Length: 259
Image (cartoon, rainbow, N blue to C red):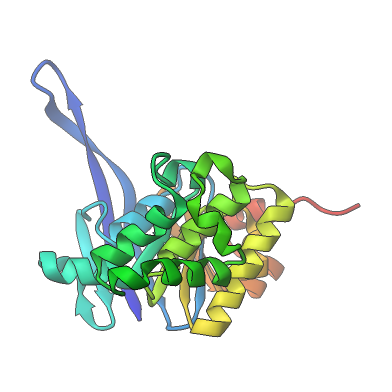
């Protein structure tokens, strides 16, 4: 479904009065991976390892410096504006901080309905019923749609963000540290919600996290990144049971143990 080869992302280093380029910082260096339909694919590593940059480059929120990206056999980097619009409906992203992801001046109905209206998925007179259905699917009462982000909890805000992504009927959702800002009990609720949506609608996930205990619970396959490069890959349980790379072993050993 999703194939990335030789992905490289670099940023210029600027200096001087006229901001001339004097070098570059390589954030992602030669990353390759394939995600099968219906799979939950984990991308793990410490902060600054290049995980989020990789995800953003895959959907062209950041333009890659080199490499190829294919979605269902089509070259993503060759997409014109019209195709890119359709692609971004098919591949949605949920960010780390739900509060900053929601417009504080828009109600929950407006936050979810804006993209639905943009892609013309339902008629205007059906929008309220559609939003109510989405809220029910993510475990919230439709009565909440008239509220604003500051009037609901962080867990509810993240459910709204998931609902907003899910409302476009995507084929794949990228979860970029989507539970790391939440309390542990709320994390479990959101992960269970994501799993229920996957089973019910056949979703595919790219799940980005630095929390290996969450990745072990949630993912089928795992890619471990360090300083922009892949250091290990394989089935989740095998990597946690028998890590090969020293960096992966350090990450696994850092997982809190229950005494």
